[in-house]
Length: 233
Image (cartoon, rainbow, N blue to C red; front, side, top):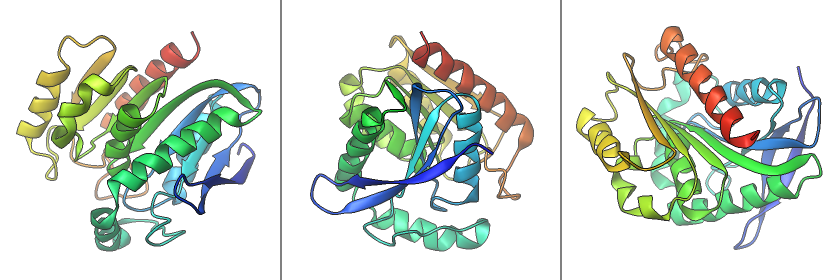
């Protein structure tokens, strides 16, 4: 496993929050701001951080629930109800500020080359989109962000490439919502959207009732290719 440490990040409106930081073997390296599902910064997120670090990316996973319940994490579906309740209480304006602070912190680290992307799953898929809107990442990957279709008026504010992943059998995101995203990004340079014969959270290998390995592997390969293309050029 790659080395890891905790980073403390200052919030724009006061206070600090933690971020799990996985370090690649070679630095300086491009960085990833990895954004949590409703399950918090759990084993799944830490494992993904180490996978990205093993690929050569400095990876930060900020605790986006720190204002509500710092350190919350669930290992599996048992924490779904509590995590969803926290997500519903999340102040998106404050979260956007925390995302921008995390991006700036990543760029300030001596191990960072200066290029930073956001990658998020579920709740984090919506947060990754917010990062693209409210900050200046070099690229963003959004996995099944259930709030993205409600924020399409902000597309013109995005200045980086964005990759979207959606499952066509997702009970939480109607096909009409995905179609709206697909229609609005059509023709926009650097924006891509892929469909999968899968449900929600299909990439979460720690949640057996959600995980669908074939779709997860295909999406992960596309994610890595996208990140390499935009962060290593």
